Amino acid sequence: MSKSNSPIRILVADDHPVVQAGLTSMLNSNDGIEVVGSASSGTEALKILEQKRPDILLLDLRMPGMNGIETLTAMQKMNTTTRAIVLTSFETDENIYRAVRAGAQGYLLKDAPQEQMLEAIVSVHAGKRFIPKEIAARLADRMMRSNLTARELEILEMLAKGLTNKQIGCALTISENTVRNHLKCVMGKLDVSDRTEAVAVAIQQGILQIRD
Image (cartoon, rainbow, N blue to C red; front, side):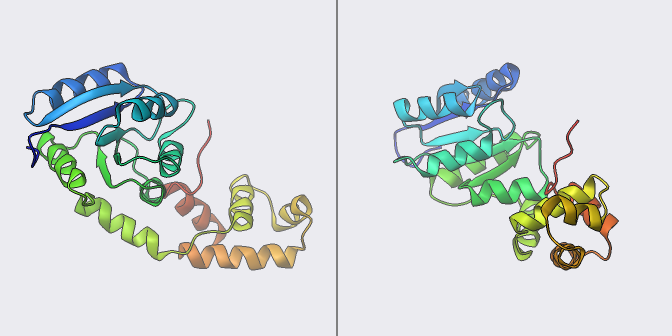
C-alpha cells in the first residue's frame, strides 16, 4: 500500500477501548500499514507522537481532558511531520471547520467503509487532503460565512438562555441599541431572519454547544 518499502506508521487516539482495538486490528491486517501505538486522550497521544513519530494520527474529536481540536492545535506548535486524520462520529459544520482550521488533513466518520479509511490514509500520507464530498460541501458552506466575533458569540449564548436585549445589555454593560446592532450582524452572518432562527441554526451547526 505504501509507495516505499516502509509501512505507513499509525497512531490511534480514541478513548473507547473497543474502537481502539477494532481499528488497530483492522489496520494491522493490511500490508503496508503498522499501528505503532494507541492513546485514550490528547495528552497521551502527544507523548506517544513525540516518542514514536508516526506518519499518521487517527484522532477522535471527543476525548476526556484534551480533546481532538486542542490536540491538533498543540501539534501545530510541535516540530512534527505527523499528519492528522480526524475520525469521529460527531460532525457538526462547526466541528468540521474547527478541525480543518486546526490542521487536520483528513476528516472521516467512524462508520466510513474500510476502503474509504484506507484511501484516506494513503492520500494523507502522500501529502494530500482527504475530505469526503458530502463533508467538503458543508465545509465550503461554513468557510463562506464570516466568523462570529467573541462579543457576537457571547450575545448569541445569552440569547439562547432566553435573555432580552435589555438583560443582555445590562449583563455586558452596553446599550440595547448596541445589542441590536450585534444581533443584526449575527443574523446576517448566519443568514437567518430572526433571533429564534439564529439560535436554532447556531445549535444545529455546532456554533453553540448544548450543555446537559
